[in-house]
Amino acid sequence: NKGKYEHYMQKEIHEQPESLTTTMRGRLKRGGSTKAKTVLLGGLKDHIKSIRRSRRIVFIGCGTSYNAALAARPIIEELSGVPVTMEIASDLVDRQGPIYREDTAVFVSQSGETADTLLALEYALENGALCVGITNTVGSAIARNTHCGIHINAGCEIGVASTKAYTSQIVVMAMLALAIGDDAISSQARREAIIDGLFDLPNKVREVLKLDQEMKELAKLLIAEQSLLVFGRGYNFATALEGALKVKEVSLMHSEGMLAGEMKHGPLALVDENLPIIVIATRDACFSKQQSVIQQLHARKGRLIVVCSKGDAAAVCPGGSSSCRVIEVPQVEDCLQPVVNIIPLQVCI
Ligand code: BG6
Image 1 (tube, protein in one colour):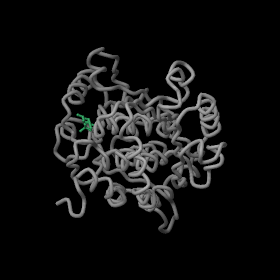
Image 2 (tube, helix red, strand yellow; image 1 turned 45 degrees about the vertical axis):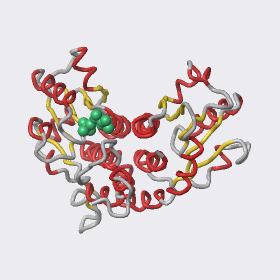
Image 3 (cartoon, helix red, strand yellow; image 1 turned 90 degrees about the vertical axis):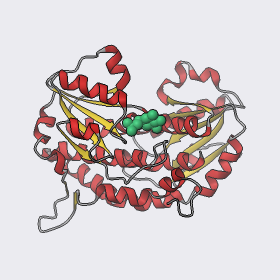
Image 4 (cartoon, protein in one colour; image 1 turned 180 degrees about the horizontal axis):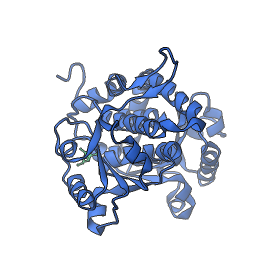
């Protein structure tokens, strides 16, 4: 039942505070007699040591699921110390790329049935890797054929363009990072800050969903355009790819997500006063680099729309509101920021 919403995708976008809560339910512990903050992923508990010891973690998926894994990659690398590589399922199979017995291959798929991802799973099983599934569908082929896994529990997703599954996948992979890194004393404070951030995340998502009207107005301005670029980096390179994918899939407008660090190596040539460009510039370790990207785009008279942390409008838009449009979002723990940042882009499509 769509309730008050026009279509299922809109309903699923607005349901994210609840779907994220369900994803985390029973898995995060805070307080108790030891006051310890911990993560418990039942489906992985017998395999977590093997994952920790693996030579490499390979994320494999398609479309939005691939983008979710890309968003989680930095925190998995940081907390596990294990190198993480990314594979688009079809490309891994086309290349017959190297997969080893010492690898942990993580298959990310909302449906758990995507043909390319299943072929890649078959291939990784043949090559002897430990195969982990992250799906939203209990009993799906990926859930059945992997050695172990985590259900994202986001609830049934009817919209073909994935929205709530994307944010729940990121949260599950952040919890995976916490579980793998659980034995390291040196990162305990960081892990606890992330757990606190996870508890508060549904509220922050609720807050950013209030931008609905503002984003619809922005969408009206963009609807007649031919093309849209989205620049992000670090945790939010994935936000750029996923935002652009949603615009293509749903608004049927040409859109490209780009790594901001690559801007000067080609894409800058496209910038003029007509082409709209979204820049993701929320606060994290890459913030000053994004400020300098914005300055370079300004110098080319780029038509900018900047997604920034609350209170940062002046810091990202030195020329004031006449020179660019600013969308302010609540700041959260850096590795969870992609969950918040994708919401304005989802509601504007
Ligand atoms: C594509 C859909 O066919 O499959 C994308 O258009 C989706 O929206 C992709 O992200 C992967 O699907 P799944 O179920 O494996 O996450």
